[in-house]
Length: 262
Ligand code: NAP
Image (tube, rainbow, N blue to C red; front, side, top):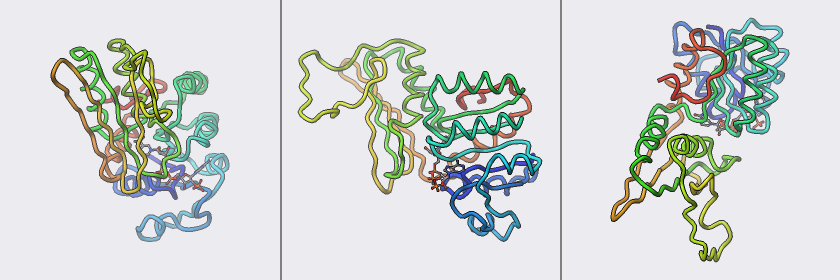
């Protein structure tokens, strides 16, 4: 499989380059990123020289280099344009960049459908995080209250995390929740009780030293149940990314969420 990495100079992109290089049946064919243009991607990733220079323009890379799939870990500001470019070039995609809404997914599905493009878009490629979401959906049947706390590094630009939104959506597919705010509740500091998605409170913490963490706390009569997942470093996402690439030939259209592949 000939893979182009979009956002190859970033934290996740460099990890993806190393992961693709470690797979015998995959070949890195190009690296796109406005950072580090002209430098050898192998050297940027702490590998030996690969003879592949980082380029800036995704569209020209796709026009000039035969590519089977693009992996995109860029920025919420860039991702939709990148996805459109990838689809219009008729190339399959694996996207981990966050900030993609449900409405965006519907638009992507339509555009990809017209071009016969397949893809996996997942707010979280860590297997443990996907299991956290699945288990939380199951537990929600038995507890009447839930709040989600997600914790990430201080460079993350979007809040709440895609994982927190996806977790809330999966729980909401199972059952509805009443807003946990009391009518007479007084917020002495605005927003201190967190944001709310259809009755589920979400709290976002941003601190240096963090990678990606989440806890889902269920409350019941005289008891709580907490499900917690920690990505301790970015290698945690790589088995999911490689699995998504391998599954591309057998899936239909665009799959949103790794839970549909495991
Ligand atoms: P990062 O270190 O900032 O890397 C992003 C890279 O993409 C940067 O080098 C950035 O360059 C580059 N970039 C920006 N616009 C681009 C474009 N149009 N085309 C190509 N490259 C572009 O961020 P990160 O920590 O790797 O995270 C990237 C994304 O992945 C975020 O949305 C994050 O939330 C998400 N993420 C997802 C998962 C998951 O499992 N799904 C896990 C971790 C992170 P500049 O700095 O010059 O803009």
